[in-house]
Length: 180
Image 1: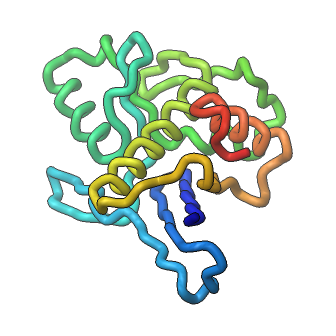
Image 2 (image 1 turned 180 degrees about the vertical axis):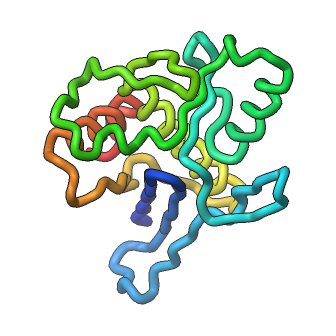
């Protein structure tokens, strides 16, 4: 039975992921680590291993896009003057750094000052990255055994325990078996 490791790097400015699928009892030097290679910025025609940490949601809090896609779609929304129908968040991770007032009911404001629960913003971002990772695995014709997958979510070592616990709760909201 293979062991799977899926790691999400939730960054302040950019985010990405990597995963491995290895047979049991494989030596570390023999493990293939695969990273995403298809984040594309359509306007700049840039391919990158990471994508901007930004999130586009409908007013109903449905996920529209994450990363470059979110930036591009939000630019179109602004041009069409439909911004009132959406939330757009970017560089929101810093709200957890050196914040002594982190609670599960904490609220973040999007770029236009519209409030939304922080747990929704972070968990929907994790959900978007997880979904992209799963799509990349499917494209490579690999199968992710959910029972034998270890999930990793990066958090800065300098964060407070409260901030780390908040991120854990956000990940658990995406999937109760995730990151445990």
